[in-house]
Image (cartoon, rainbow, N blue to C red; front, side, top):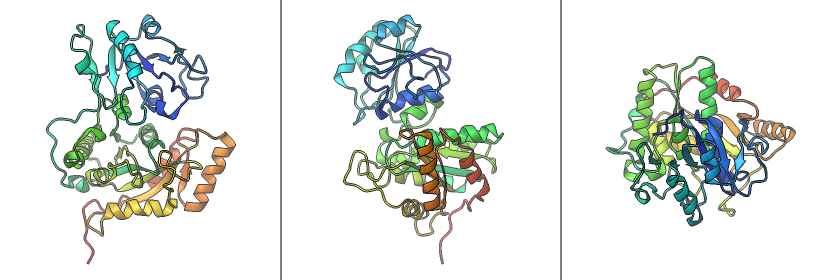
Length: 360
């Protein structure tokens, strides 16, 4: 829906330096679209690059009208508040954007298209979190694919699963390898133009939706055994608000896992009474569930992608070294240190037998 040449503005009111601005940060980092500005009337800076949140120098401005004057034709909602609903205080700004002729990209659960039935020619609204049509049940067909299927798993929500996955794909392609990214959330879909919004899919069809996207990625790769499919993870097995992991495991039938974690985090951020378990034990839990007592090939955890955005460079290096020593897994922050070690870890691991096997 989003033409990669259209100039966009990102609406991040009050969130230019908060984790809930992850949609905006993802667009800034990965979207091919020209980003003319970020909108936040109470920002601590006048440029996203100065905040350390973007490699792009993108001005931070206060109003929708100023964004339109800079040439923005599309407004992307760049904030994901808890619960994924559109706050009532955003509505006047969205009304002004539509009145000025801007199109909208909405990754939240509330649908905007019904609120704006009378758009101008060429104006549109993309409500990303809508269940795709003609979904069916899963049938473990991905288990028979010949290429590596890398599922990004996490210890919590918003720890960098999408970011690490996109960085792995970028690095693999830079090396000349064939790699595809299966987006499963609104940010990945926005920046890649394809995927499935898993949290908008009815549970009976969730595995089938992931399976369909994984098979489509395999088709794009020509079923090349040397290629790689990276599947964006969602949530966490231990998170009481997350139901995504079983559909992801069964729909993609992964051969490899990359564990994503935030440095220093010991408990879930929104459920502070729930402790994050030992990382080795946690990775084994995913492997055990993926294998299901030998019903499927056992996925192999190969590395840990560590989110160190809140640390200094020296602290980040020390945190990675400590986890690597503790777990035995390669551990890097793919943004700070590059994804090369993660791709190396995947390249040095032999892909597991793709077809299911049963124990005696």
